[in-house]
Image (cartoon, rainbow, N blue to C red; front, side, top):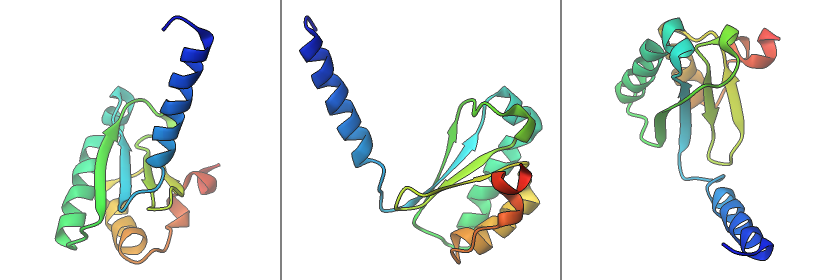
Length: 121
């Protein structure tokens, strides 16, 4: 890279690739798994998501981990991102709450408002 124009071309190409990934054929469940999340129980929450999704035979959901979300006091934090890119953030998650989120939100499309970031604040 030698010019500002080359840098701008790389920037544009990267943003285009990111934009292409905003809409997928599946719902994403992203669990904050930094040290603060793990200390608050994120590993158990992630395992509960995988287990509940398998138990209910929901095929179009991908569960993954991410690093620091940046709000340690709300851990474990889980983002559910639907096929259209709409995100719902669940906070203070537990394996018990996961069962309800999987049944109501992932299986039936009804957001569990009482567990969301908006309700917390």
